[in-house]
Length: 518
Ligand code: ME8
Image: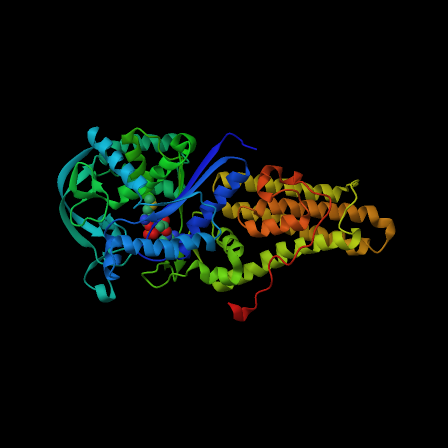
């Protein structure tokens, strides 16, 4: 049922200088879960991801690999970035590449408008640049190098030397937007989340904004500045515009989906929360609805990164645990908006405790008992006991808490609320001891009520886990003998999931994984 609302969610578009690692996958899975949840509510949902293909960083990777930037980008997009969508079971509606015509045309038109409206001027410029970040860095973010870079100034994120850039550039009058941005943040307290990210943005803007250099002349791998083709557009301005250019080919476009909800890493927060709304304000377009900054996946206390050889590819994990467990693990184990560490021991432990023993065992034994004691079909008349009502109240509470958590992008909390129900159901079955009730014909009504309650609870779980573990939810749906497809049931209606009256069979949802397989 359509609720009349729309929800547009995006991931960052990823640099094609290398293949994806689980830090990139994290944002993609989070956006996918939000998209699926909103879709399941009946909202008109659009989920965009894609690749960022211009700029010096990509150009240098291509040269190092003896290819043109376009050949290099094609190779990585087709060989690595598109396949990962399948590895992670992402439901993206579109995939944008910044080298597509629809994007390049949009960028040129957007910049022409800003230029015609007087927001752009030309000036001489000199500053220290980090090609890894594709960003001029302030003093505070430059540190002393170690090892090979002893005695040099390096970027605090990439640990690579800063490069001095001196050229004539076009500038965007970002400084003119300081007051408007502060008013906007004030009026929209949830625009930047979590609170730590909001505070960082507020203090940065309060400390004063400089105009932004938005073109380059020292290389030509980019969108040409429309009024001066000796310049290409700065890769970050080019990249941010993907969120709008992608909608230019979608039915209903911006009217239907804008403003967007952006999931971004904390290292690219300022681009999204300061530069992006300012560019939009200058163009007379409403700023995004929300910019949510996620933390980093850390290895040895540092951001996981391919260039530091600490990257783990998603398929290394999914080949053992499957896409659903991958998705569950990262959404549950890391508090959304905070840093977290991955470990094989942790995913192995959670897989067995929370998925196999928690959810899997609960679902298997409930369905098996309905088959064993009632030939797969429970009576339609059930007499509920206070214990059953209590359990269903817990289910209602889990639904409310999880649904509300999603509005705050707190995916880990939605899962924690769902697992309260898993634990309550397991405890309920242990306490009600249906296997004992089954020994005496006189307890037949009570046995039916217990299994009916447990089955209703497991159906609620199928609905609530679907955005995170769609394959598991679908298997569960069939096992429960539910009607239609699970994604048609809004989380808020989970207690009323439609049963055909007859359960099916359920193969183990999470087979045990032997340690040597890790
Ligand atoms: O920044 N943990 O692209 P990118 C969590 N093209 N997130 C991580 C991570 C980690 N270890 N490593 C990277 C860019 N990321 C630009 C974006 S958007 C208009 C343009 C995240 O490929 C990183 O924080 O370097 C960022 O959000 C995203 O991956 C893309 O990084």
